[in-house]
Length: 200
Image 1 (cartoon, rainbow, N blue to C red):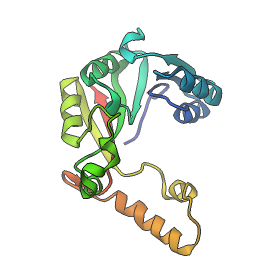
Image 2 (image 1 turned 180 degrees about the vertical axis):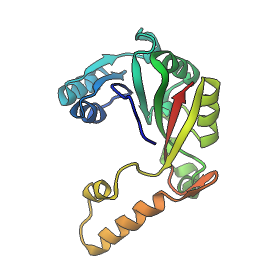
Image 3 (image 1 turned 45 degrees about the vertical axis):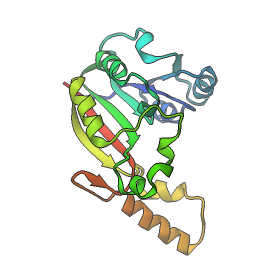
Image 4 (image 1 turned 60 degrees about the horizontal axis):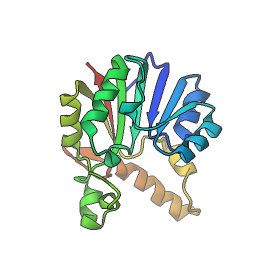
């Protein structure tokens, strides 16, 4: 999916600020939000971006003030996702993009590990299969424009971040990269899934 007219980005759950840093490096106006003051300070130092501390619905951001909002592995920690999505719908301009990345418990990888899969940790409020994301989006006035399974990184970036060395490890990493992108209909190999939603 090609993201056009993106100038102002809000990263909800901005953590250590790497996404903010990348946005600022590309000349975008980037703002972060995090509930942790410690992480907010790290993100500010790394990116130079403004980082607000608190829960998004309580921050009073202006209506229609962002072109892109990102939630990168955030929904699993949110006790009231409807309220969060309503806030995002308000601050996004019409036609703006919401990117959500979550881990699909119905993927082959998650199913193969059953209740031992890491996403079922007690610190996670919920898990988000594809149907749940699509239903939440529809209820809150968003259309699903694209779904990306597995890593959104390029193969080159994927290999650059690999911790193992040697020819055999390299081959395994390439195969793993390809396999994680396999999907058909409602099933996918990899659990990590990114959704691009358009505000109606």
